Length: 190
Image (cartoon, rainbow, N blue to C red; front, side, top):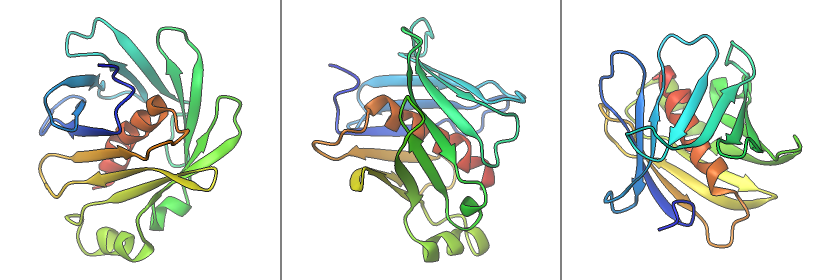
């Protein structure tokens, strides 16, 4: 099975890690582990390596912050095997205070899309009343809906279902990296 050819993935963060996060990404049936992330704790500048499995022998992707402060940071996504830049995900700092918004940039730094929280009203409920309301994000690429990230209701174990729409031009590697960042970066705000 080609790990980048699926239309749906299930992303689960490990509950209660004392030092660093662990994220596992499976096929939608939760049968096959496709990606494993072990995020190191206490790093000033975010650097995330995505592995093929828990052995951490095969690096697939690298996600690196350009700056120490992540309020409006840019995260470069590179293919670990070739070193080639796949794209960049840039958090819209001020805009994300009220409603999480990210820009999707191609390998040449051109804006090709956005990742945005489902609605302003739901975002306000999450921020001011209860963070128990699951988040949902829509990825729009060149004006067309390309993917959808839906958080499951589980206050203890952060989980996201990633759905790529048929025929989308969104590189799965960039979409999977976005889901990882949503769990790591946006998850800190909970």
